[in-house]
Image (cartoon, rainbow, N blue to C red; front, side, top):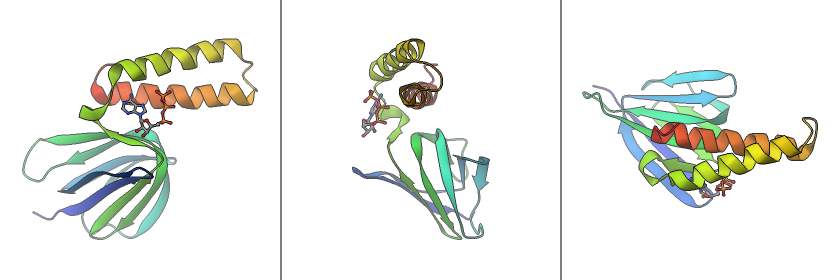
Length: 136
Ligand code: ATP
């Protein structure tokens, strides 16, 4: 069965590297499934989960990605992310606290304020992390 190489890289270094059957990402334009041999493309990513399906098994890895750039070549997918964590590396308590902080800030700010938008993005990151761990 054909596979495609995947690297997820952040400013702090590589987070995930594997050969997989399929990569599912959340681009800003919507969900995107990538199989080996995909045409070359570059797309901005939203805050979301990256799902990595392994060949010949139902096993799937999950990585929480906080936005970035997706680059696809026929044999390689590269994700340059602002931040990314494998499901097993996510600190649930930290994400829960970040979620509560963001919700509190959103209650204190007006919807048009820059700080409201910042809190909204922080909330998206926290919810994404909790979703990836299955704790949300
Ligand atoms: P916090 O307010 O908890 O720092 P944040 O969304 O502001 O959350 P980021 O700026 O996205 O955090 O990330 C900063 C660094 O911390 C990154 O390296 C990211 O991978 C890591 N990180 C953030 N939250 C978690 C978490 N819940 N578990 C593990 N690593 C995390």
